[in-house]
Image 1: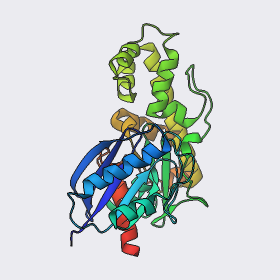
Image 2: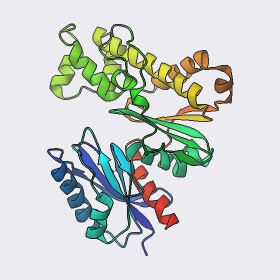
Image 3: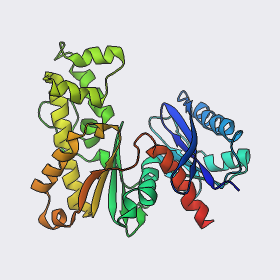
Image 4: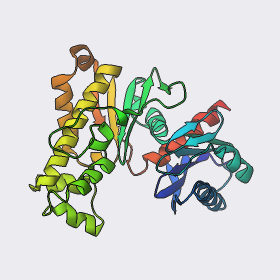
Length: 314
């Protein structure tokens, strides 16, 4: 029997599918285009992608699917999502089980990434940590005594909606996600073009290269609009991280997501937490780090970890 599971990472643009062993090795993977035109077409795109991939796969132990939005893992239901038009509950696990005859398990994508950290990342060193994903949006997974804290409806960790106030002269509305996420930074840039028509960010937007990395780069080169956005993103992540440390008292704080391709960001967050966190929480925090897992694959690894976790229980 093939000792691999199928991981399915469903994003707003692509669906990444791969075979993943219990050691976290990706044996094979492929990307498919996502369809966000309607709920029916989104579901059809996911099912078609899985159907295509499994045609060339050996016998599978299980399928794990990481999804944005609100998930009911126990019932295998995708309840709702915002950036993919899921407006009514979908029994996705059952639909794919009927198609593939393989056990199927679902979870939220950041919960999934946190499970991957538990199995193959920081979880090898500790039973207590918080994983924060800062990509298009911001969300976190909390692990205490090797158990993921889910909340009463599996909706814990939506830290992107933490209000931290309007910072500097920026264009965000005061929430962590709109100020500090990659998607939030891009939206701020678009809002700032009228006030800063000479910003290099306008050219990046026209060329399709406007993202958090180019905003940080432009800020380092002295672009005024980029500097405003980058400075308040850094300050906001410092405030948000300090709040997380004070509220949850983790042993380790781990970051993932594309925004952390800007490496100087981590040291600035460490400094802010060290200067502003409560002494007890600060002194018991052993590390603030970037995930050791490949950020390009953590969604796929997270989806696979859902399958491995549930396969072991079944």
